[in-house]
Length: 512
Ligand SMILES: [Zn+2]
Image 1 (cartoon, rainbow, N blue to C red):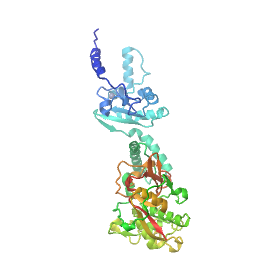
Image 2 (cartoon, helix red, strand yellow):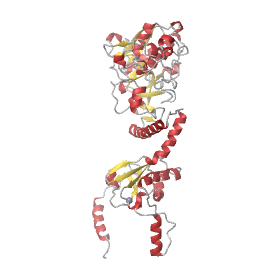
Image 3 (cartoon, rainbow, N blue to C red):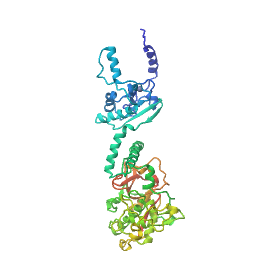
Image 4 (cartoon, rainbow, N blue to C red):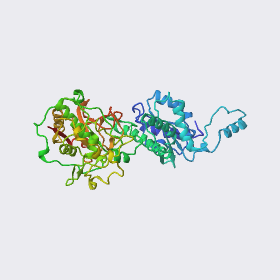
């Protein structure tokens, strides 16, 4: 039998292929759980472009790679064959931009005397529009049908480079952004600022998707209250400017028998020793929250009374410093809990939150001047503008100090995390610090970033307990970013591996 077409050549080629074929055992669904829609253009080889192997994905091809033409296959791919993500690839130099549907309909009418007006050929007027329209069509028209909410659309340029095209998502992301603004009570002063924040929000959207993919099941990240801030802004305003981490003398360390065994879990919140989660706002005052909340715990241990103490007093008045080793308390620019303990020892007491309330980080903040002995060398230039009426010298009233509360000393706890757990159980909630660069979008779970320098300490917090999830041990940490952040204001971080330096600056005040 003789074929006039390519068939005989194909049959020969296929015989060779069959002889070597050994992929029949590959698992279902496709390993990468992705369905790809792309143009039938003969120059495009999706496997080569995307580095795909047999068994990795479904590839659906049609003229232009149009989503509308692929709907049937996409539904089957997701509903019956287990794919999750849709990738649509359109390309430059596509034949689909060279005609209009009406041209082709006319041609068919002329040549075959039959009408093809009912067929949408889905020609492309503008390539940029098509990459926006196709995912939008899937999301709008078929949002109930498609399990994935996101279809990523890409351009192939010169059949080699893939360029992310986020345009298509603009409308949805702006709706998301507007909802976020409402939920977070945020407003911007100008349209320019709105645009700028919107574009940061969009960047963060994709960053968070990436984080969630990288972390797997350990921790989840979300578009939380910091979603309109760049990493850089977050580091510079919310986190502390980096100072050398203190090294404490051997005599500073708490002496107690080495702890070998602690219970699987423990939580000071269950004993009423922890005040509600606060919000430091848009300034770097975490160190004052960490120190004051440790003292709140110490006061609870001593008096069995839970009192909210004044963070603002520490922010406004504490000018403690140790220039030799490079640490200073710097108000809204950061500081160290151990120095705050020294300030409280020196000052003789602390007011309550109600007599000296927090205001430095509020939406309409107070404008305190720097503490009297503010160290410009270690802290940087003083605040550009301030009011005497908002400052320590006007506000501090030592007659309002909590009666009987005297900080007389402070102690450090060595880095062994079993010892820290033991100390926590004996002494109460402990002040600590960590590298919190990647904590910005934390939502829930056990924080354990793949890379996190334990020597870069830029955030102070309060250890209140520990536990285990499956076989993964964690610390329970009270943060000062409001109850709307993380796990109702708390986060969990891996315990036992010195994650992000969480075990390196554990300190506590000692009360009289
Ligand atoms: Zn094409």
